Figure 1: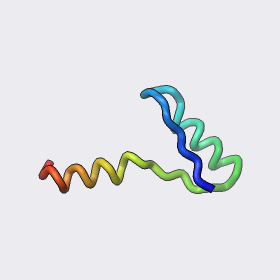
Figure 2 (figure 1 turned 120 degrees about the vertical axis):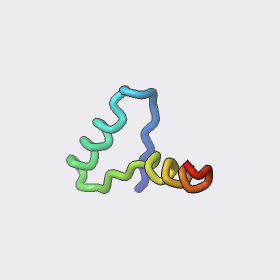
Figure 3 (figure 1 turned 180 degrees about the vertical axis):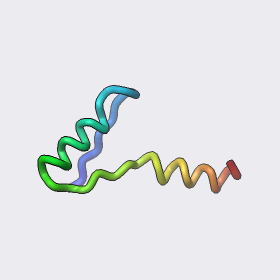
Figure 4 (figure 1 turned 60 degrees about the vertical axis):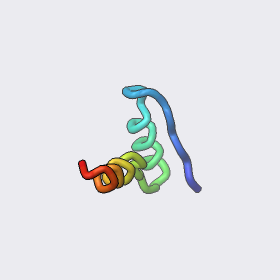
Length: 45
């Protein structure tokens, strides 16, 4: 199962994700991290 959570900054997305993973024993994956790393490589940042 894949669940995506979206919302504005500081709206509780990480808190909800961590709660769900603690409650249902799942993996918590940050989508932005690989995007930011890819942008650094692509734009020589």
